[in-house]
Length: 207
Image 1 (cartoon, rainbow, N blue to C red):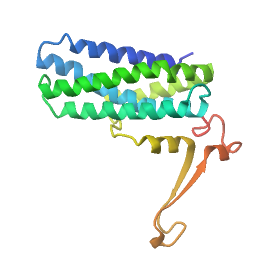
Image 2 (cartoon, rainbow, N blue to C red):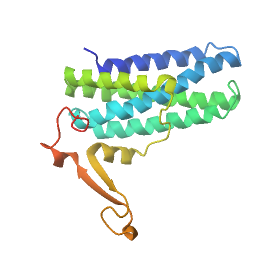
Image 3 (spheres, rainbow, N blue to C red):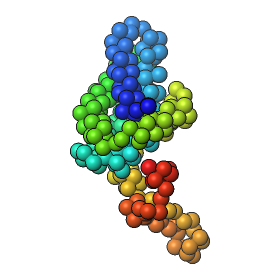
């Protein structure tokens, strides 16, 4: 069976290896050839974790502190994305470019180490083989939908907002749908815990 944890570790190895390749590059062209695919992979990896792995950790994780681990991960992803955006504003090989790429490397290294020390072992203790296989399939489908990072959401995420959406279903009603126009948009929040027994266990929300 496929395993989401193994796939994440494979990504970690790929990211570390390609950061090390930058140390051996001698020209601007070599730096760009290494960095551009690496930056796209960093963005894709973060987005895949936020769509596939961390919601599952929050719902199924029973070891450690899934909420704290998820909040830390989203914060780390934002720092990495910020450094990537800064690097894209500068010519590969320039001082400002090296500083931005260095920040991305440092933030990513710390994130991977923390994830391998906490979130991944904790999830391994909580999730069975079937769930890990299902998540692995979703992970590979995500990468298939975003080859070379195309179409990936590169925007920073609000950690608190992310946690809120992982724990509750939010229904949004447009103006006029449930109240006068002047009342504006209505939002109804239903914690997933209140929906137990109503959701299909194998459905997109139930998982």
